[in-house]
Image 1 (cartoon, rainbow, N blue to C red):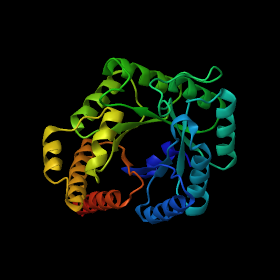
Image 2: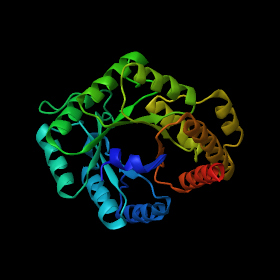
Image 3: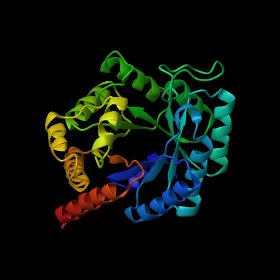
Image 4: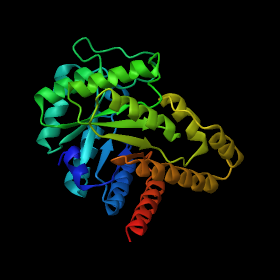
Length: 294
């Protein structure tokens, strides 16, 4: 089922992102994790696509397994990096044959060791071109990425949001944002997109902090900033993993509650293939909603 249609019955919707592991043992563990999150009744799960298409086969294999064997509606990430149009068409054809109805269309990051994105001479230069190709040729629901704090390669946020508007005009059905830790960035981003006439759903992306050592490189890579208080608090407990995880869960839960009170249609969780924190957050949010209703 197309995500845009699923969201009509999931208010608010919760979705989770996973990445393809390297070994068969880790893939088997991921399948167990995916089976475990079924109880959350997520709107969908998404499976990422490594830089340069390095995880292409694993991405397709996992997204197909998640839908056909586990029963989770799934979205496959697909990027422009190194791929020709013919290769991307092969991937899309396989997804359609497998019954996958959703994709996340991205330009993609340069492969490791390469400083800049270099398009395949026979490929796409921008996510907007990839989005247009999918929209014109396939009956797929297309999600695209939005950056509340601006893309790291963009000179400023307004320029980046111009590019996002191009992706919407090319046929995107919904926007999933990059992670952020201050909701004011999302509110500003959403307001600007609405003022531009963008009416499709905008889903905020949230990453619960579960590991102090991971947070700095992740935020640097995606261009998200850490609030000063959050950084100070985490620094004080960095050598106590359980405290870091508990703090991260509580921080993300508070963040999500404010977003839901604001009226967002759903929340997309960046899990780093660890579902415990996300499960706790979703159950907490749902308990609060039930309490309010009753």
